[in-house]
Length: 456
View 1 (cartoon, rainbow, N blue to C red):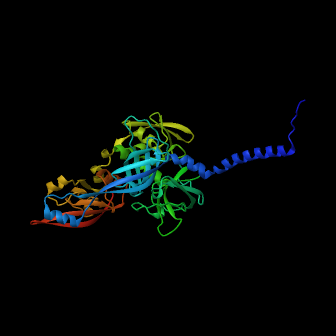
View 2: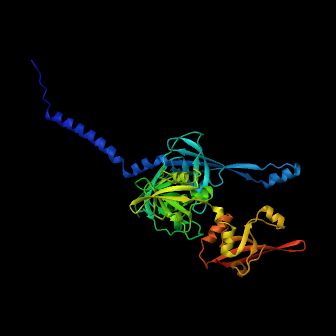
View 3: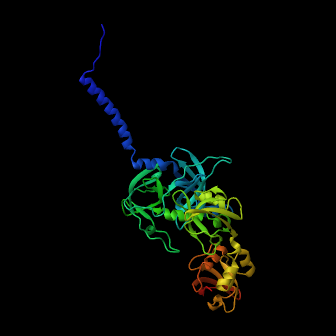
């Protein structure tokens, strides 16, 4: 006798319901992976938490009073350690991290931590207070070949008003955190020359940005970096700000410029554009300009090596110690190879250049020079000669006076001073703030003045 099993209609219905529930569970899993989740998953390996320690000396007047009374020859200042928290994002596979300058300014120890728990020490290698950006580099054991995951940059200006944005960082020291919002404003004006960066120059978002988020990335739904979180409006809710990607790229271009790294004049800046490097600026009469490079050229290779980010660029242009570098570029549908010979800056931007444009000869007023001349201060640029009938003479400048500011800015070096003057057009007026001293018997009388000099 054989038994045959024929499932009833109810059994078939149960089987179908079970299979449908399995499909539904799988569908729920895929539904949960929204564009926001995917963007966060893509970017989170590049985000770091930053802890800093700053050692400061604390004065206690009462303690010093008793120390002076009991032991006037011994005074030991009390040191205090101040700690702060912030965020950052990896922008180079060798361990370069971008954050806000105010997060790491004056820090004596910087410690960074990734979302997966890895921790490293880091050093500040470059900074710009005007843009409030700083570049860190992870301190790795000698010989280590470990690479890190850099964030992908959005294109300059690729911002959609009202698009979904995500702020990642370390608010209140709570560890890796994310918040979602929209891009509330993208039309902030660029600062004018010498203007301090303020809220008018930032992106605005209603994504929650709190203390500790500073320096973390603001990304779009593609997981691309569109800004660096910087501040929250104290008097408003849902108003946060970020430094736009265009300003970030401009600052990184300066950080990795051959002029800054090695004092070699190249005369061009690069920006990352869709995973490739593009020349964003070419200075007139610079080595790059004379070689035939143009703004908008896409850099494919340098010295036969592919370059895709700022670190690759700096490594190839100045890191190999070559006087002439060969750039393979893409322009107008074809590839070109252009050699560029770098020039030491001091050979071009020097006292002779200032003399040719302003009719004055200057030198750095060092402490030793000031002592030799019997001056009561040092710093700035000492005028050692004024050409008769030249622009400086016409403006009333005299030998022995000291230039301290140029158009309300203090040049950080003689090279920077000469660069500023050479960038002016003939007929432009330069305002020089000068100081000079007059000795009357045993007294020195210091005088201040402002000279308006026309560039020739």
